[in-house]
Image (cartoon, rainbow, N blue to C red):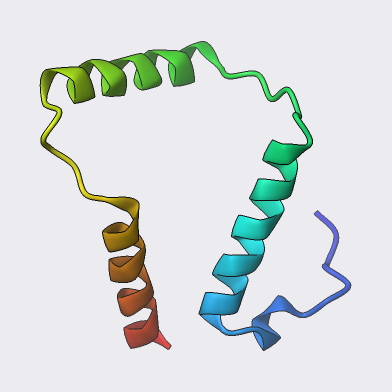
Length: 76
């Protein structure tokens, strides 16, 4: 892979996370058809089955993200 023209390390971790989210959102909006592998389909089916069997489990994304950002702040 080629070296990036921009030094992303100049951004804070939060800014880089936001950049990745924005980039991913731009791909999703474009309607890009990204095929899944058979293994990915099986894993998604397994997770859906688990969610349907245990609907009260799991952690909201807002809490997961906050935990990740807290850990990243501790590492910086």
